[in-house]
Image (cartoon, rainbow, N blue to C red; front, top):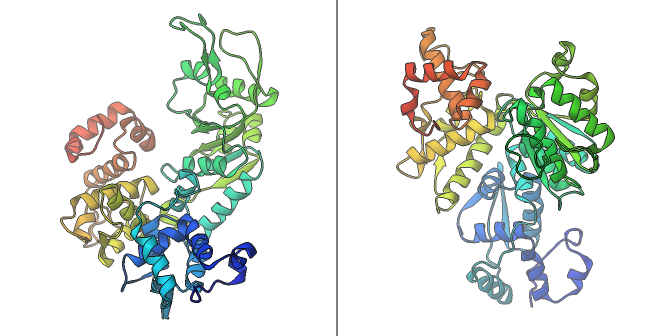
Length: 442
């Protein structure tokens, strides 16, 4: 009998307690996250891990991991060691029946179910951590998802605004419907109406057939308008009309089409200031800003940088077909990451970790593998290691390189981020010979 399977009644359904011992074991491993934690720890018997290492390796949220580990500890399959800090390790059950069930389970590959949550919800791990501001962001996302209220996500480039928008959709009642994302900065003014509202055949030269716009495609789902602060005034007026009437009229059409969608918008620009300058419609601002979520820049949540870096490193290892813990950062490397100003936020951190993992010739990533980062808390490297002021050209070169890394080498986005023209950006890339640094899109 499975007498060693001890589960608190608060964490086990009543029907599970009344069932057979084998069924209780099956209930334990029916949770994808519990199953992953069990397999991960049992495969590394003799080792112990803190909660941060486990959440980083499995890409899960802290609160979810704690809940699952409590259940596994109660079942006698995981042990909790408390000696200054709390660590978790595999526990092999003494009961022979329990040991047999566990042994058979671990010997069967691929029996774990897929994670129940959508990928975007799992990616919320990129947004949360120990920082209190990010825990409030997560709570705001969960609150907004309960209704169809219009949400405005504010935050700097690379902070994860689209991740937040997708999570709002996937946590809400429209999760089974379409999620349509439009970058207002990427769509030319002349094509915005056709892209977002659609067009009829013959509406303009080249319109050989009817095309549904993003608003229609998002019917009963979610429409995400990224960088809405870059929307021209003419397009703002047309969008406002759709939001007020809940009808869209295709370009070249004469009939209004009823639409029902949830709107989530995002921007890194100060919309209140744009409203005061007459560059953004006040009535549209209040329409899209019924509920606001603000994402802080990464430099304001430095406590989370080691946690995020380890998580992205585990993902990079998995992408290369390696165990999640195949590589690790040294304390010096993590200190270097923590000292960087992160102008590109989460996006830059992901690119930096991937580059460090690629350049490491062994399991250890030390300071030299992230030595290309500028130092200084919140400063883009204006001083050298000896405290002297660096030449302006060096500072400018490093800042442009950081912006290119943050945008994945996207020149248009880099120019917009730096508030310079693309011609100026290309000239500076040639001047500083940045095109040869690798990984940049032409």
